[in-house]
Length: 301
Image 1 (spheres, rainbow, N blue to C red):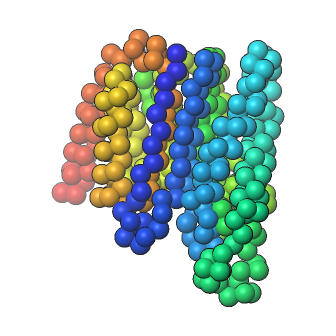
Image 2: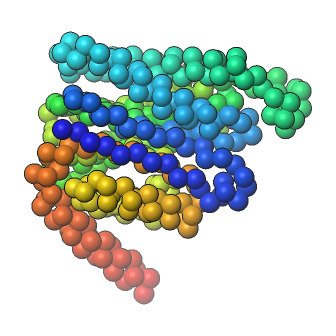
Image 3: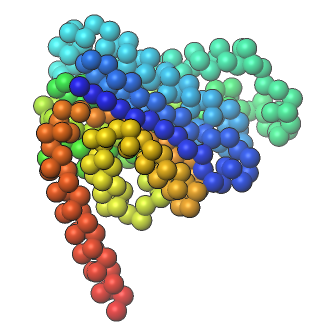
C-alpha cells in the first residue's frame, strides 16, 4: 500500500522582502498508484501571479494523471509498450489543464492597477498573460509495476528502489535555449519537458523537490544521502512529518533562503521489508561522507 507526504515552506528571503511563497506541493495516494508533485513559481517581476501558477500546476498535474488512470486495467496494459507517447500526452494534458485554470482565474480576476503599476504600458503589453503565472513543475508517479516522472524547469526527483541506493532517474535538462526559463507558461512548453520511465523495479520511495532543497546542500552526494536518511524515518509517518517540516524550515531560513517544497510517495510494505537495508545504507553513506571530507582536508594540506 502506498503512503505519502508533501509540504512547502517559505524562504527567508521572501519573508524579508514580503514576497509570498512561490512554491506549491501535493501528493495523492490511491489503491493502485500514487503521485508526488511540486511546483515553483518564478517570482520575478513579469511573473507576478506565479504563486497561483504553481498551485495551478500541481492541481493540473494530478487531474491529468488521474484522467489517464481512470480505466486502470487498460492503462497498465498499454503503458509499458507505449510509455514514451503516453508520457508526452500526459505532459500535453497538464499544460492544457494549467492553461484552463489560468484563463479562468484571469477572467474572474483581471489584472489590477497595482499589478500594472510596476510596468510601463509598453512593457506590460509585451507580456503574454500566461506568463503572469509562470512556474516549474516536477511530478513522480508510482504504480504497482512501474514508475515514471515528468519535469519542466529546475528542481529534483530522487528514487530509492529495493537495492537501497538513492538515484536521480531523470537528468536535469531544461531543453531551453540560453536565457530562456523552462516554464509551463512558455508557448513551446511541451518540448521543454523531461521524463523517465522505470519498469519491473520495486520502488521503496520517490521524492520530488523544488530547487531550494538541492541548493541547500554542499554536493549531490549530500543531497542523495539526505534522501536515504529521511527514507529510514518513514516507518513512523507522523513523527516524520514533524521532523521533516522542521528540517525544511531550518534549511530554508539558514541555508538557501529560498522556498522549499518536498513531496514523496512510498510503499509501506517494501519500506518495512527493506528497512534494515536502508539503515545499512545510511551507515555506509556516513562512512563515505567521512572519507570524502578527509580526502578534501588532505588536498588542502
